[in-house]
Length: 255
Image 1 (cartoon, rainbow, N blue to C red):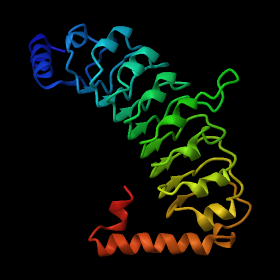
Image 2: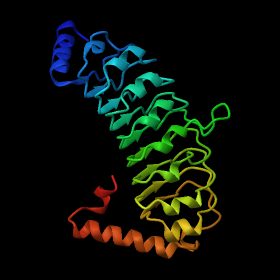
Image 3: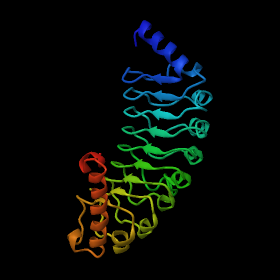
Image 4: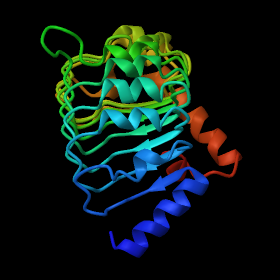
């Protein structure tokens, strides 16, 4: 960052609480950022960050949006995550090398969107669920954990009461838990390109899912021949009809 440009960015950030330092080639969080105590948004996408300093915890108590995507992070500080828990609504840590989510994430009671695709997240880390902190996110609506190393749905996934959209594509998941049928708000589920061989009939028949992506799996037969497919297609048709009548293109609504 040039000196003048950097000063201007920091002055604006101090006034607005919005810290925007995208694609600056930064290897560490600038000291000037650690002096902004009214931070509402921190966007450091596309840098070379390998770690987040614990000192950042002092600045993020009112943070609503965090974007640390496209960096070189292997872990997110538990103290920093716990500090932002009271206000954070959107987290994007995609395109890093993170193997587990910090326990502090469990306290993020206002979190609505979690984007963590293209990392190294696993279903098990040293005998413990590396994603256990997800289970208490009662307001989470959108989650993207695609392109990781998951072999199963995260523990507690089926207890997320407000989840509407989930992307678990391109992992090593072997089964869809039948408990998904009880997720009343879940409309979109992408489990394409995994190792799934069958879809529980009750998920097709009784769930709220109206957009299910299963391409790229070695299913033991065409989905059209599976029990519950008629009921699933009825929900899908109803969704498309609502989008058309509401003046929304189905293709746009799926983006």
